[in-house]
Length: 372
Image (tube, rainbow, N blue to C red; front, side, top):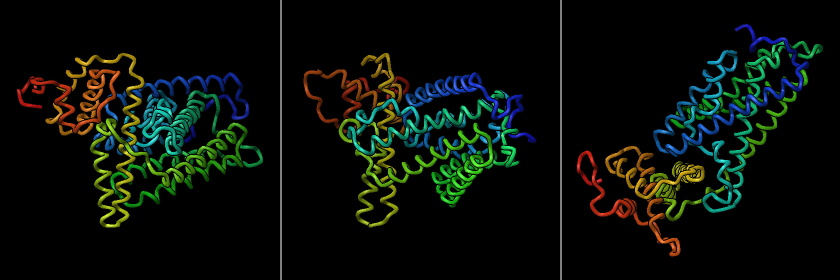
């Protein structure tokens, strides 16, 4: 791979407003399309162990896929880069870009510091995806030639600096996957990624032309804000999921309670860390559930919800994501059955919710005849 990116007749400093507008439009179109795809993916399955595993593998595969795809000027490289940037629509972690549609006031606990910062993180990641995508589009479509962007007095080619910057941007995802699977060295890899990314960006600000300097100055600013948000939010208590909404996050909420009690009894930091992680998972799942409800334009009828609950075989299906979807359908059907003039009663345990929603004699599998 001799060149940094595709060749172009444009010099880095000769890019015109038309080229900039074209790059912004193409990146915006692709970002909007992938944004819609992530909403669709979220509405299918909010979270769960299977989705979290898939996202972790997406993190691990991100360095080789995104790195090679960034320097490939063809359709396949561009598509794979954007798909990797959006985690192949498997994102289940904190502050996914589409969560900007769930305002802080609509999140568990209402408007508080954690919800405001979490919402801003979603917006910040969306800005990141648009910017990084635009940078890829600018090099792929020939709006700027990164091979000829060095200042004459510096004589420093951006080729190796761009590669180092991309290595840093992708190695952070490798560290996320390593941390999820408990592989040692995740923190060291993450620190290395920050050094690579910010170090290369700073070097390009000092040695490259106006366009590269502006792009990398923005990237340094983005990274500074993102790191600050991460450090601040690690010290803020995650809002507790309460009431009927907790039924859609029972496994995570239950794990949080159990881990919290274990932490109190044993006094260990490991249990406390597990409790915080479980509370965050429950919170993220509830935000994702509210997102999928908010974007549904055609509300299913009670009969459709009941049919979907029965088809999911709640107690025969080991996948927790499928169970949570069924519970969510059942709760929504119960809400629609209730008199809006009367206050909603507290949510009963899960089996009671399912049986009450299905009705007498309706809780049997159509295939096996067994009780669901």
